[in-house]
Image (cartoon, rainbow over all chains, first blue to last red; front, side, top):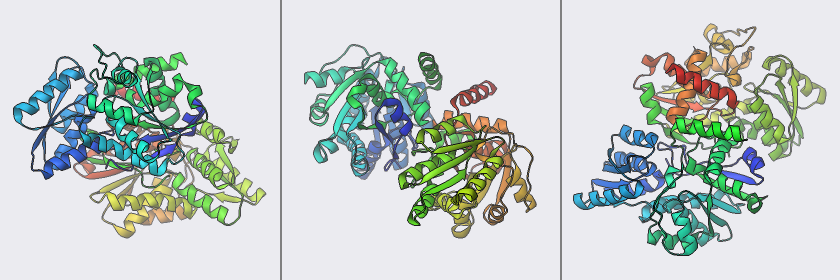
Length: 305
Length: 305
């Protein structure tokens, strides 16, 4: 259901960006993000061990995916999210019938609360990016790219907690290290990127980005350790570039994406010389977006052309 | 590149439509429609026979796909299209470097001109729906559905020239005849549907629909003959339902589609009792759409909610 997703060259987007662009599309599945790859692993393992409940904190996509996998495998799933999380994502979680607990504060508050729920109820906390299954799920994307994107020079990966980047990056650094693995994060949520450059955990007090899927403030030390082994670079991009990326993916690729999925395009926009003429793979990691906001971004970007 | 496309249950769309809906997504490829399945067959055969040029008439998607396959296989491709064809589609054909000849009149005028070009130059005319390769390409969708959509009750298929419907329908009627094959056409371009019901070719003088990909007036007798063997029903839908379908696929599935791809949803909207509680597969056949018009439809439908 989540494996063997489309991978294809998008000429129109490549012309607009001045490089060869391949799209790895992770949105054409029941939860519209790549997160199902990992939650299917987790839910299957939990069920095999006879467990019947689990909890996670989520900005939305992990929660939807874990709820979906939980239903499929007969697990009782609780999702903890910030009250300010994407309404579109929270609606999908509610519609599944998954238990949803909302907390004040941002995603870091949700992480704390989810950990408390796990302790109180004695159930497994699924911690995105820290738990190996979530990285294994992402790694399957890397394996598929390795099989089919044989001429790739660069893979651009949205960086949030780090599961996608460490999972995909691990595969390449182990099996095809000459492909450049570049993580991309919003300048408004730069904690992991700063940590990568300083080689130590750097936290921030706030986040300010429309890319809600990658808006963390407290990098996990173990994940940073892995990311230092698996990424060749980590770059920050402006909100304006993310919005233009969302618009270009619509205009040139016919794709409706959430902002996190436009980070790769934003990275090319901000440093075109670096990518000129190269074969760039960008992973379209999610399409769960509040449509009113999406329409606003499309219009704003349209005016700015 | 065009085979093994995503097939997945879309719960949100199913809730909105009152049935179980599976999406077969034919847009995540370099030409953003299912037409590449057939053009890859045609271009490969032509090349194997030592031919070096071919021509087709197209409302846009076939031309883009044939141009793409031609470039890949080293064939010189000429596409003939109506001057009024979708600007987005014509732009993509031009960008490929494919020779594009525009004619006054509608798609039927383009078909006549393409036949004349083929005669004059002594090259193969690729005639959509009549040429078996174009139906074989569509039939591969049927084989994939048969393998994976094992609980399907109904397959809803956009009906234009008939390649998609006869190709997919043939597979089901041969191998799993209890699955209902329903063709859907706009009320503003009803020639093939009327022909199916009257069991003889019925032509119309005009067409009036936003679903440019299925706007023919002159059904091909041989295709009608096949369609009578392969379809269980053919229904007409209003423009308003097509627009609502486009909007619902955006809102509930996160998909940007061209109007032809919304015909299946439109059919459910117009006859919900017929589909209530059943498992319906709808083939999302293309996403090549003029965005200004698309935005207009989204807004109009938004107001009508």
